[in-house]
Length: 229
Length: 229
DNA sequence: AAGGTTAGTGTTATAATTACACTTTGTCAA
DNA sequence: TTGACAAAGTGTAATTATAACACTAACCTT
Image (spheres, chains in turn blue, cyan, brown, orange):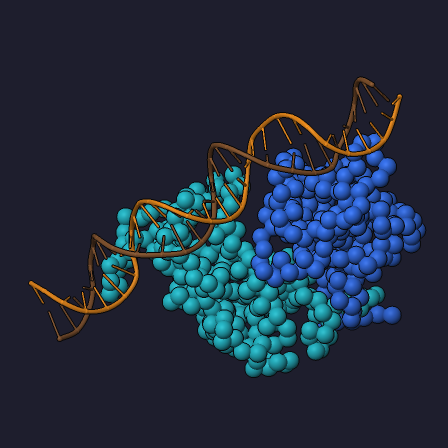
């Protein structure tokens, strides 16, 4: 089948930067390409936009096809349109990013004859196309965003301790935070529900578990609450 | 000339939301369409991406062609890809926004047989495609951004009074600000240069003129200064 | 029972934010 | 020339937010 237009058109793709938290390590989901160009090279999951499909759907579909990940919240990151970012031809990519709890979402390690794996942010190899740059943009956005939006609960298990939450913030912001001040601040936001449970299987005093209370959060955001840390 | 691909492709356009300040009114630059669809309808300036052209260049070129505006700073806003946003076919648009000083940049009111005009934000009519939605997104971004970045000097004349600056902030944020607190805050940022001039042709005591000092600003941003108002 | 590990908690000093009103300077018109 | 008008310009005090800082309690392990 051939498709013909009166003017040449760039191709459009959608790529996903999926962050996951695993044993307090911040990771990103990559796939190994099984086609030219960059065959065998690691890359962000993504693929070509279909006509009639919203771009976010493209991102969602490709992510599911290539990694098995489904039902994650995608946020648009940026559109990269340098004409030379793909050596074959002009390809514009709309990048999305997502945060997932690595334990709750199982990633099929091998789908579509593609290899998918989580990489520590610091250990990400040279990627196909301009994907290193896209990843870098996503990291910046994550850091920028967490300072004024209580993002990141998607990365944690449903029930988590304040230590886990603080460690996550420290990982993303790449600096240490004062325990007492962090707890004060985050509890004052009134977006966490204190559970009647404590963590188990730890070789020390068990910490209280909390869960993110979306109802409270929605109320706060409506009131224009400032979540800055 | 015909261009043929093995898969169908959505078309790609770039659109610009250009804000301007005119006698303390916040305005947006629109063009009147001279082709179907939405012939005669007002719309954001923009047009189709060419192969080999960076998307931002598309935006810049179309803006110059349709309105005569050149050399403005464009920032990517968002990419809209709903398959039905254009009634003809699937068109993905990458939206940009810009801030210009309306007095300094002359807009050719009629170029390419198109009519271009500034509209008060509140008086914007029903626009072509999903352009009202794009404009709304741009307004939100502007409001969000001005709270932590001292944006907006592009909107003012090179020399301005603190009253003008405050009124601009009030327009964008849509609330009144305390004069003394505003002045304290903005002067403490140390990004303004106090000039040895005062405004002229006013029917009351003339105010001191200031100009934006980019050198100071760059120093501040490197230090991670927080400009929140 | 002792040692190790993290949980959990308050106070104080400093800095930022908010609320608030009067005098000064200049223009314009009577 | 003077009186009325309009906006410029300026400081303080109360409140709130932030930052720095260290010990005891609880629980597990050996």
